[in-house]
Length: 290
Image (cartoon, rainbow, N blue to C red; front, side):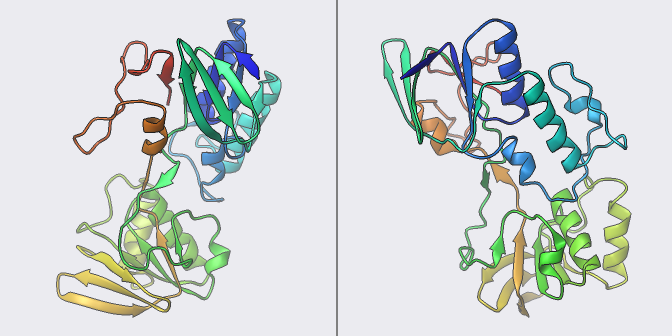
């Protein structure tokens, strides 16, 4: 069994930043992640551009140089990989945490590959871990995608995009420009005002000219192999459909937090109980980051 001063769960930007600080402080540590390096960023759309400028994404005082003020997904992946190598961070990837046991003031962490012992755990698993499900009939079908990667896959297909967030709008425009027949279903009465200012006019114009169909004040209520059912203000309609991009947001892995003994608020928001000054949870030695 390996023993460390700190075990950091999650190899995203925040987890890497914690590793850098731990190493600088002379503490023994290990970063474990069930996926690849910065797994959440890897799952972003391939053509995604960040809303933030590159300097806002820097860690470890390492400059993030990008070709444009707002970096791309590919540039971010390269940056965080380079930072990890520069600091020679102790990282185990594709290693999931299975169980956690506590004895006195020590934690015994069992993963899919090894067992560890520590007095301090940092949870930096982020909020992109699990999709926010629609909980409708047919959502389990393989045609329903909660993560969007590349528009080419949907070329010449009838695609329904759920939502009007940045990710939904980007997917709708990219798929349309790769030859997909795109329809959007949107709960609100208009495209979200928080959509990137340089993209919002584009999607509005495509909808107004009829290149992309949109149903406002509407919701997806059922998915079947070859159709979707939408509830509109005028009643239910059925459309032919090949794929559904349900980009309805993401949420932390609350079950994982509860298994670690972290109390969650019962108001529906499930906020983890923690000290805002130290970020320590109700479990002594377990901290939140990111």
